[in-house]
Image 1 (tube, helix red, strand yellow):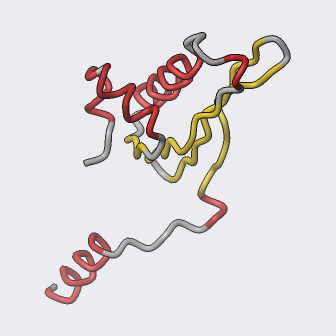
Image 2 (tube, rainbow, N blue to C red):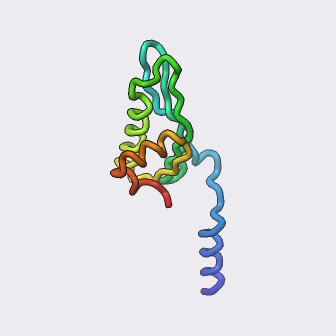
Length: 106
C-alpha cells in the first residue's frame, strides 16, 4: 500500500504529459469584412488552455476580443472544463467578469 501511495503522490506532483494525440489545438474565430479575429487554444483532457487572442488592426475596438473570450469561457462551462489562462486579454476579461473566475485553474 505505501508504494501505491508514493506513486500516486509522484503523479500528482509530476504528472505525465498527455500524448500528443490526446491534445487538441484550435481556434475560436469570428469573421468580419473578410478578416479573421481568433483566440487560439489547446484542449488536453478537461483543461482548456487559452493561449492567444489576435484581432486584425482594422477590426480593433469592435468588441471582438471580448466576444471570443466569452465564447471560450461559455464553452468551458458548458463542457465542464477548467481553464488555464495564458492570454493577457482573457486574463483581463475574467478580472472584469468575475462570474467566470470559478473556471480558472488555481
